[in-house]
Length: 257
Image (cartoon, rainbow, N blue to C red; front, side, top):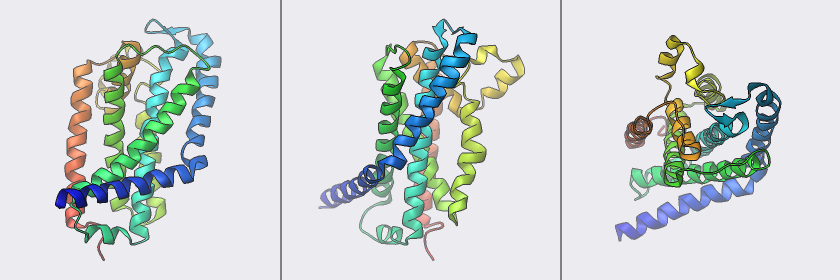
């Protein structure tokens, strides 16, 4: 009986999240596609002609994995933080917390919704990239697994942000002052081999570097970091954030008045 109730609850949360994404597709899917198209035109086409090749690949090809991963990260994070904070602001998150559903089902439902948006946006950006360059996936399993794990990690990071946010302005602080700088400094547009030794060591503390390079390895077969380290970093952050989210849900931090 509990398994059936959990499954129904999980499906309901996921359906609500996916319906929300599709209902406002002009806000959830189209803007990232337009933004990434501009990146391809400006960085890949115009600036890329002057740069030439990067790690043996045409510059346009080199930035494709980074731009896809950047869109997945921002979309997964944005979907979770806006949706969960909306539920908290509307006070209907309290109904979930007092329901028979265990916290891990609530977390899994919201994460799956954010994952769905991340996959949608990432797929659209990948299709857009095909209009500018040729993309051949070298290691499909690594490509898909890194994308899914990264999306899940940033979905849970978005939940932490939403839990501690007290007003709508608070959900924009982390993306603006933390997420965006880390993304741009995460090897999306360049190889860390170009950096001086000091900044190369500093970059090693940026978790997004490992996610971008893990995904780049899956598509192009090249990476600035060992793929084992990429998986280790992603999984470690995933376990840490999952534990934190479940603890915050259990304590009702920022959700019970």
